[in-house]
Image (cartoon, rainbow, N blue to C red):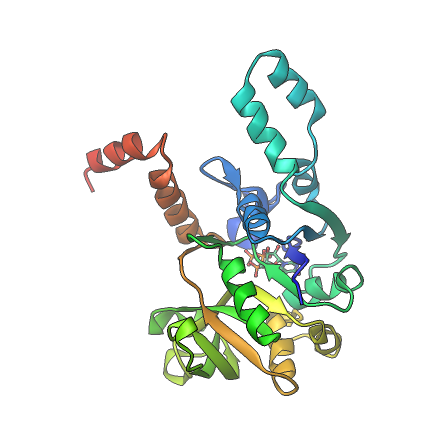
Length: 292
Ligand code: UTP
């Protein structure tokens, strides 16, 4: 079965970036010259998924505007002969088809996904958190779709993290799937623990912001009460789903930046700038000149 829909929850309050996020969405903060959410939508497009469903909320209009056609701006750029800029601006609105649904109260990631239920319907779908920027040859989502195509079950992206960092993540317990295709990267999950203390963690395999979910998750989400932080947690619903059907964890290939955190945001900015052809050289020179 194909993955035709990607849900992008963008209705959170972004408190870790206050005051920057007081009057603008966190997802619109730029890494070099593109907002966080654009990296995620580009990944959706590059993975061959035709529809992005944004779960938005109050104060998030800038996201809709960003992906809309900007008639005046395009006219102005065309009139001034700025062809390259015009091409860039136009490509943003043409990445994939987009639709929007509103989460009236930011009651948590699990709740945000539940809000998209009617738009998703009874089919498997992807979820991308735009805080996680993943730089990889094959898009992370595409890698996960390949796993889904083989097994037809939910797949969560996982990453090995340092032991002391596990308490910031959902952590899986599982056994590696013996199949040379996956080069030891695929795990059949047997349990998951939300934000464990390092000594209690079942592994150092942390769940990050990419998921492929079967529609059975909606039933579990609707039965999930408020958990940690008084929010409806996706991990709690995944835990329930695990009792009913298999879930796989896939250690994706690529470099992930946690841009939802200030330090991770800065790291993403520096590393992505260094990789840009037009910026890399002068920026490296500048960084080297700093007496650190
Ligand atoms: P985060 O856990 O990073 O929360 O959400 P947040 O509110 O964005 O940021 P902080 O922690 O307060 O700084 C992960 C993703 O899920 C979305 C967010 O917009 C973000 O893209 N989200 C979160 C929702 O759409 N609704 C929610 O109720 C919570």
